[in-house]
Length: 371
Image (tube, rainbow, N blue to C red):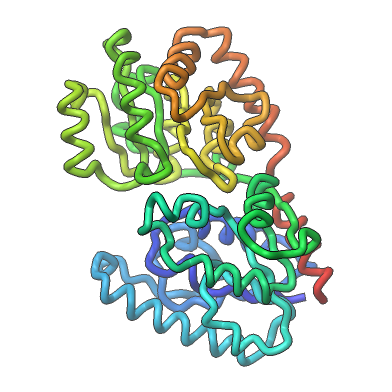
């Protein structure tokens, strides 16, 4: 059996949860003899693929900040993917994002669609720039797909709620993580500032339903009661002018820090954090939860969407729209050493239920049903 993956999630983005998901699938399959695959990609600066033997793409890091260059790369990658599709030398096609460019070129070959979350459907009215116009594209792809893979039971129910689809067509395959298991370049020591265990960690994007502003507002009285406590935000882009003004107005601008990190740096941040806090209003899965478990970091989670499904009993939960609930959960964890130890142990145990190889095997089982 041969699977063809396309370029979409690897074009123009250096990092990202979707590209990480497909990279881990391919990395698992590269170790096996019972499946062959091809990644149709010509131009990319994706860091996950940088050392991958299964991709022969060209990098253009010095031009990566130019929008028009990325647009040209996307067009060239799409043309290459269309050529590989029309060549027909594969058994199953698995696009890596939601674009329907391939539908007329696919012919009778089966394709599998991975549906990550319904954030654009659930929050599109509140945040119009969140995947505007994406609903009709997703609807068409779900209708045409031979199988739909989604990453949590929560996301499956979201699909069934927002789209007309037979439930039997949708399979739940939980994600895994290789975070903390692969050899990493030693972290830059600057990522472990301020002092170890004197900060709570926030990871990833901060806008829209990610609820960072609500989290920061809830943390202000906690930080006033604990003058040595800091917040580190890893990834998600540098602080905006509005964010800097928010920190300044709260007189906490010297205690909120941004860190652009590699995997090694991020693992170090988890390992040295007092706790990891995830206040999001909506997650299809929530890979940072598994990353925190991998780094022996106590986990504090929003009680919304898929997060209780992933964290189970290995986290402390809060209502993400209740400032007092957020602050109480954080303060409880950072001040109770016995609770922190218990959460770390439960996180290790919970992590055993998830692995990239398990994700790959269950996805392969779905491919096989189509051939």
